[in-house]
Amino acid sequence: MPKPHSVTPDRAEAHEGLYLRLAKLLKQVETIAARKPEAEIPAETRALASDLLFEVRPFLARSLARKLPLDAAPGFAGLAVQLGQALAGLDAFEARHSAWDPELGCFVWLIGRDATVPVRRLRPQTSAIITSLADKRHGEEMRDKLLRLIEAKAETAYEDGYADATAGRPSSPPPSRLDRL
Image (cartoon, rainbow, N blue to C red; front, side, top):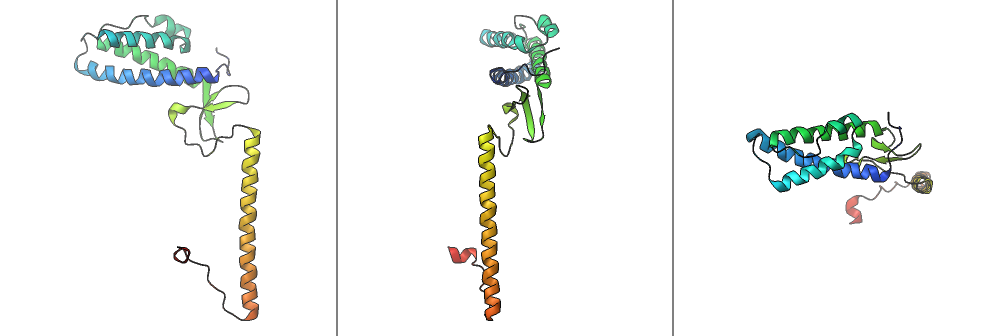
């Protein structure tokens, strides 16, 4: 069983790039295989597929890596099966080395004991990714400053309204957006 935190940022990045290239080639091969399953694959496509199948090996479980042939299949149907198996192996690797982070609201790679990196190929929609303690402190300081400004504005508006009411004059309505233009 692999160690739970055996992924480095470089390995995670390599996995994501390989996953996208493999998925794109698989989609193209499956499209052709649906119409012409026994058609011969062009040499360039076969070479690309062989290279991708070789690059996938370090991410696969040993049992699958031994079963996956070194050369790409000569026909589109066979190649679609091989690429599908390789993609499933990449999915399994990702499942072993990633988890949902409720704070970030996305899946992350488990890099170290306390380190995580969002799985970028899933296009995480995080509101903010804190990269260091200094960034976190800066964000808290900015939030506190904003809250103080809002409270000061509300207090000033209250004092102005109170002064207008005690003097017996109607309070002036806040300026509208049209007045500011």
